[in-house]
Amino acid sequence: MTIAGYPAAAVADAMRHFERCYPREGCGAIVRMPDGGMEFRPIRNVAPRPDSFELDPIEQLELWAAQDLGELEVVAIAHSHCDAPAALSERDREGALLWPGGPPAAGRVGWLVVAIRGGEGRLKLSEIRAFQWREGELVCVDVASRSFGAADR
Image (cartoon, rainbow, N blue to C red):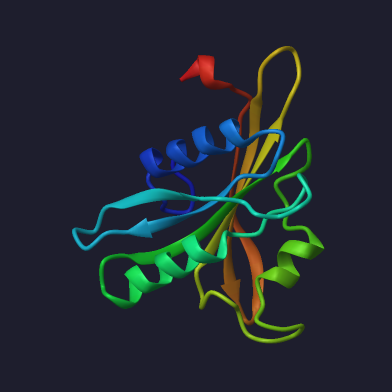
């Protein structure tokens, strides 16, 4: 499944990572490699609460350092919402800014939010939303909905 131009393989890798993290939110980044290909890079969630995410500061620093060295380009921050919609929460919107009302914290990279629902003995990835920056706001630019789990891949 592709969404907002992110390749199916990168999206599938992100979804598998988010399934493994459930019932905690999972997080990571979609990066473009020098050859133009894109891949998902998982990043450890260090948030104290299971219903939020905070990128591990060391792993995040390593990611941005790799970008500064020209080894990759961060194109999207991705995370899951467990048993909740794939919409940006107020906390997500606040965390996307350097300071309240300020510029984007991670440049103008996109965001992916994946809704994962538990139940019936297996997880279901029910929706993915892609967000891009438009006039200082993160706005939804693509939505993919489908109920499926690991057994369906």
